[in-house]
Image (cartoon, rainbow, N blue to C red):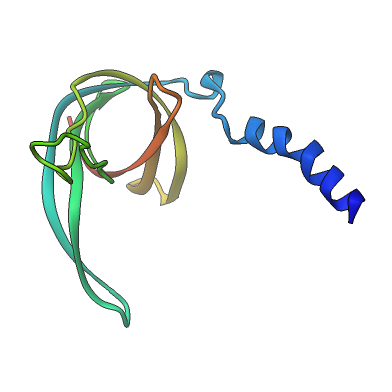
Length: 130
């Protein structure tokens, strides 16, 4: 039992180190031009319908205008408890989290944003325009 506790104590700092994102991995510059919250309803197989707040962003990434969707965070303000927070417009660093492309004319992609406080949030590409 003593060896198990010793292993936990020794590995705990390693686990917390591994959980922190490396800013050097976030090399994609994202300029958020528009940010809004919308009420989104969908359907999950066999679990019925669900509704939740979603963050919608209009961004510029490498010269392409894209629309991204992702989760929101809730406000801790006393005047509006539970109010979703809107991401401020401006520049953020991101990395490609997932990219799928079976051919040259369509794809699916998501970006993971790194925020100044070290937290991350994933947004999926919902649209692209020129």
